[in-house]
Length: 111
Length: 241
Image (cartoon, rainbow over all chains, first blue to last red; front, side, top):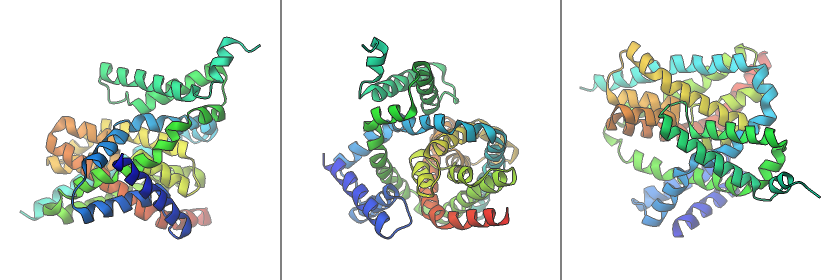
């Protein structure tokens, strides 16, 4: 229970900060606040660990309802289908070798 | 008098029931087929959309009756701090190479997809939904909504990227002669988030660990930079077009 309490508290606080003064979305501010909390404490208590694993384990389930909204966006999706696929594939064709190669090169230099 | 089907679909928890059923089936198919493309989010979404078309229900009705699931998406996003914290603890030794690669990669991913799509004629709402495509879904959804874009499109683009990235990675990384498990894992987690991470885990535990780390950090870095840099980039593109 304590784990869920912390998570909800940080989400609430994150949303509050996001509405008052930050350009970041509320849940993301909440995530950064919880990260700061963990860095300060230096450990994760069992209840928080359990709640977080449970929520993240079922993440795909939580993502289905937003994705079903594609029904209302079908027109935009289909008219620009070619551009969307080309942009997604193009960025992977460059991004994958670029990042893999860059890290391998940076780590190799240190030996 | 309403028909039995109508009474059933008007139930206030119909959307929840439908989603849980579709998710269960999608998980079963993923385990049975073992295919990378059988992602539960994709198959589950297709099943729900098919069921809604078959019963003639509106998306709004589904949205209202699946309410409990929407409530949990925010807490799940906050919960990402736990794996992020655990991953941060493991990188001290290779801090700079990792931070540079992930910073460059996260920025390049946003720029590449937005510039390519804009060149090909996509307009601002679509560009917003494409920008966070390499980031884990809950963060991508928050970011797209925060910039005034569609959460649904963002969720679908994230899944398409994940599947395509995991499928293309072995070939592309071999062509680029990326052999170190750390570099392969980071490339997978950075470009293809959770789907890439499970692909990396199949290669080796080391690659899987680095993929999880890259996925967490890419999410955090994009979450910090996109809300600040995104409006500027989109403003320049729409101004130039």
